[in-house]
Length: 241
Image (cartoon, rainbow, N blue to C red; front, side, top):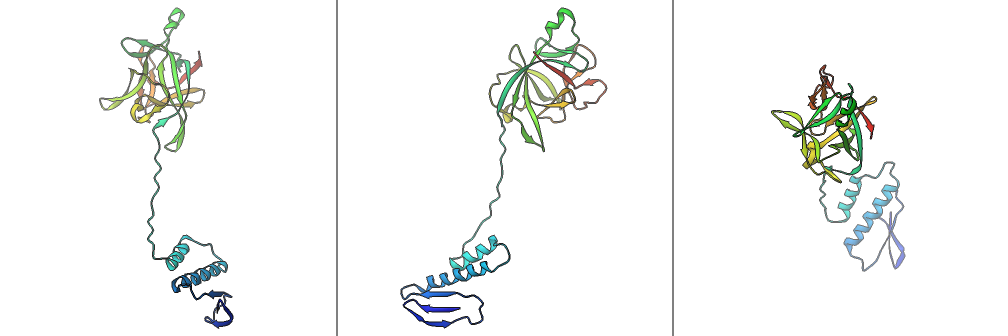
């Protein structure tokens, strides 16, 4: 490596005779010694990187900065991604609903749903299911369709709440419109799951509990964590009104 004076380029000196780098550094009279040292280090580092056969890493950059500037401490910060509990409303549907045994939902006072076989003029008692659909999110490794289920006439919505140590189904009067906050209203949220040609509804707050009907007629619609049990039905047919 050769050094020369800026205004006397013919005066050179071999400072590092054993170096394989062909680097020339010009030194001015007014340049501070510290700045000159930084410049030399930058040139050396640049040439070193050019001749390197490996990728330039973050550690290499930190070593270079430490040589040129005052020592700098770096702190690694972990990035935590927070998932919002807000579900964006997509659209509303209205369906006729029957369970696998062709029983319809019927509303009974004061606030109860029962499943029963209806014939003739009694068919008018069947409840129309109002379904609000929200844009799906990836939760627990799967993407499921979140819905809120209500009765077409009135302000009753199906909810899943814990009573006596286990989830139960009930009807609640509520006003649910637009986007949905799971943290505040999670009891009303269900996931619509396809099972062949039929549909199942699983509670968002209690993932192993399904909306079910009894194999017997005129029994309350309820929740079960045994969807394959002999006395319950969890599969439904939905038809557009």
